Each structure stands twice: as C-alpha cells, then as structure tokens.
Length: 204
Image 1 (cartoon, rainbow, N blue to C red):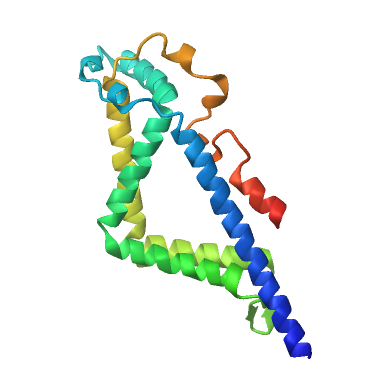
Image 2 (cartoon, rainbow, N blue to C red):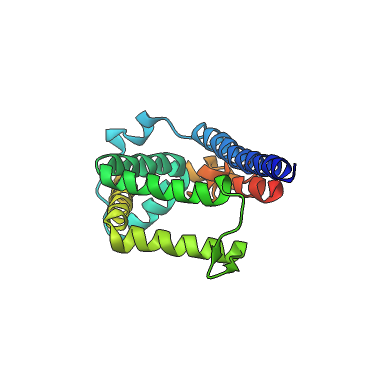
C-alpha cells in the first residue's frame, strides 16, 4: 500500500514538473511569435540601394546604433538562424547538447528522489550547481561544442555588424521604433508579454 502511494506521488510530481516545462516552452513560443510579427520586411533589410560605405568610424557607429534599434528583430532572426545552421553542420555538437538536455531532464523531471552522494542528500542549489559545472566542463573542456558556439556567435555578430554599418538608415527610423520595443535582443524571448521565466517561477 505504501509503495503504491509513493509511486502515485512520484508520478504526480513528474507530471507537475513536465507541466512546468511545457508551460515554459509554450510561453517562449508565444513570445517569439509575437516578436517575429514585429520584424521588418526582408526586402527592406536587403534593399541594395540603401547600402553605402560609411565615411568614418563615427558614421559607422551611428548607423549601427540606428539600424540595431530598427532591425533588432531581423538581426535576432539572423543570429538564431546562423547559430542553428552552424550547429546543424556539426552533428557531434548536436549530440552533445542533446545528451546534456537529457541529463537535465532526468535530474529535474524524471527523477523524483533526491541525489545522494557519500550518504548526504544534495540540496536543490547543490544539484543545480553540480549540473551546471558538469555541463560547462563537457561543453568547453571535454568537447568542441564551446568553440563551435563561439564560432557561431562570432559569425552572427560579424554579419549583423557589417549590415548595420553599411546600411544607410533613414532619419525617420527612430521615430518608428516604439519605446517598448527598444529592449534589445532579449525581446525575442519576452515578446512584450509575460516572461517565460516568470511562468516557471510561478508554477514552481
């Protein structure tokens, strides 16, 4: 009887944790969809008549500031797309990331009993720090995933910076950017609605 009750409680706990994860993913998807709707037309992004060499560093910096504010959603899509492409071209990196995702899923969703090391139960904080340290070691020291990620992010930054510096901005750009949409790249995740992290915190 006791074992049956314990099994039922474990299943309920797993279901609750899975619900939290699904809620997080759903909110993240909704926020990303809302942000993507704010993207400027790609014909405007790649309008060849709007490109020109800046006269100097000051002009290039000014262009970058205006273009990042105006095209930030498009630049976010370019960054995500470039990173995804680089990762897909490196299958080993995807395998490692999938393995780490499974480890975290097992620790926080599948396993209901606490971790015990040397006869001592790990607290939630210790479990999180241990998994974070393990993930960092695997990513940056035991595999080439870290260098692949840095390469992808560097390539994304190079492409975005080149476009922002060469694209001649219209002086009306800044007038068209709503005040609440100038939050930068993270707006792709928040989408101007309830942050996904808040959903997880409230669910837990």
